[in-house]
Length: 629
Image (cartoon, rainbow, N blue to C red):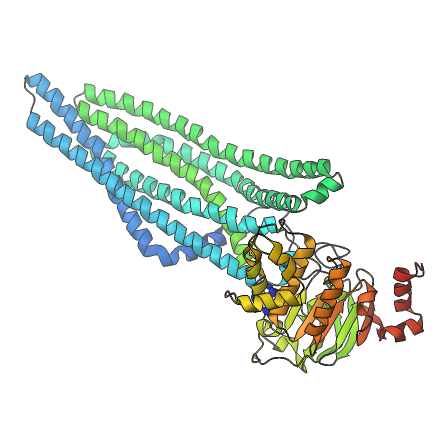
């Protein structure tokens, strides 16, 4: 990610990632990497620990939360006294009716007090809501920035076992779940708790017996909530997990929809989608069903308490121990008292979903990062490279490279050939420290690459891959990306485009260098994309070049022109050329023939042909139709 994105090495890359050799973790013999998906039905690993981590994230904002809590408390306090004041109005009207004369001064004054309480509640509730919205947006902004920065520091192996949709789901869906919880869940929880406390105090001061009667149903509600929460966490976690899988599946199929149609895989794609969607449906309806059960069950228990309060209140009124206004106020308090209890019960489910989402976010933030302890300066490398007894495997039990030795002098042109899965691209991955060797060492200018800071090391490399990668922006911006800065030097951009033989087709585009490439880069041809990435490589002006079938997507005439330009670019630079078309590497200083992770032959083109070994068979299979290979 950022190691690829921020360095000149990768800024000239044709693809976002270096291709993994077949058998690497992204696909092939070794299967998925070590960081696969969660198993079905997995529960939250550590709900308590996740809660502590989430509180740690919220800690810097505690002063603003305190202000929001204060606003909520004042608002709740005002609205809690409203039924009492309303009861006083009713009592005053009934007393005045009995006496034959209403005390309008008292009634009007009481109405004004009631209006003031409601208006004050409105002002402070609005302030509390605005504060929480600002807080949630700040927290979400920082979380997304932290995740993005973390992804930039993760090794390439992390992305080998995950789809883009799964990773994006954690940045979008999971963080948005936390956002909603802060905006609505915390707000409602605060108001509900304050409401319960305030109403309980007022109810006790009004009539202790009626208060105790209304509390009879509370244990029933708590038991219901405890049982629901016990069963819902697994479903909320599954819901977030399958949502990530669905996003990954859709993104993958959309990116390759033309291939899906070409091979008539629409039915299989729909079946796979339906399978994941069914899992999401099952997890979704179960989590929502258990959440929705809380309200009718707690509502039923609350209504029982409400009936008991009405009966006890009527008996007290008949005995003259309570006024009608007090009974009316108390009935409202009971109804309001049951409502926040039900809301707290529902919020408990919201927080379960939040913990499931937060756990997935913290999993990313706590992933082991690339260790970069290099201390070297940024002085340009000469380009001398040495592989000393290098051993490497994507999976420990399946070695890929064993005891590889190689010395490359500065300015040499090295071609790497071999069948698919031989380890050609893996060699480049190790050279650029996308992966670290398991044994031995790789040295640049006599210094182990592990002693180079990754950004300094990759600044020495320029890459052009067969798989092109362009971002949404102008042609000029995509070429200038190779310079590693946001500034666009148009003179240099045009010069690099001419060297890459891309200037002619660019000038024919609407707007020329200001033509905007869309998000999928589908508004230019594959060959044109390749030429732009080659121009980007010229822009990076590297010390070491890596060309992985860099001209595979251009026509024969353009290929000749690009080869000439490449020769100029490679002058005085160490160059590694991964080639399948052996006609393109005849003039290489040294050709490395790889098979099963080892260099089985090396030498110049004519020398290798004379040996009539592995390279000879490869060459003949392309040009003479031989079947020895």
